[in-house]
Image (cartoon, rainbow, N blue to C red):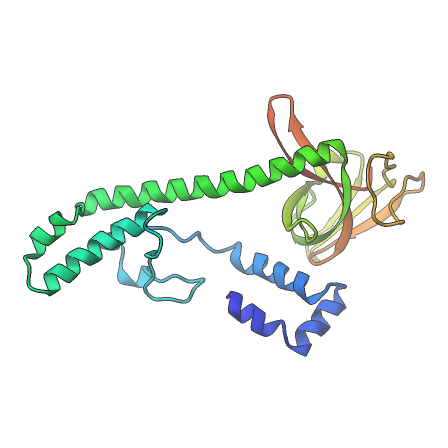
Length: 255
């Protein structure tokens, strides 16, 4: 998928598409990656005996058969694969398969299934911890000085919230309309997939960095039209506290 998107985005058609929605090609590439990969299931370790061979395929990499192998010093599933391969090579050379299997420390299929499930849990926990630690670091910075940033709408489905991607930070966040902006006038057009928000521009204090002149306080209500690929300014700040973990929060510049 990565290679296909890269090949697509060097075409003139891609450049015209990016310009038509006010984006550069690199940002369009990042958005297409998000939209293409988010619906996919995460790749998982599994015991082949638990699944039909038709389910072994790695969709994102377009391989019928794929496993980790190259990093046994840091990844336990690679050790499992090395042990199985060593036993297979011994059996292929004429040694007793059952003895070779045990000699290299291999486990029965039930235990292998449990190991695969445990490795999946650990891999997901490590991924979540890595992403959360990066957001926590940014949240501490934003707690001292919130920032206004350009965001691109990547998903919306109703009048409660929508998802945005912030290219400057490589970050995807949810904007909660209902909880964080209860005073807004909200209109959701389900057929067209358009959300219209009406409210007054939020005044920014001196410690909130605004990179564009359009962001300012005012008493006149402003209408904001939200749809997929729309570009809008959002306020990045520190959320959480009071017993909740700190995290990066995205808010509208309307109140």
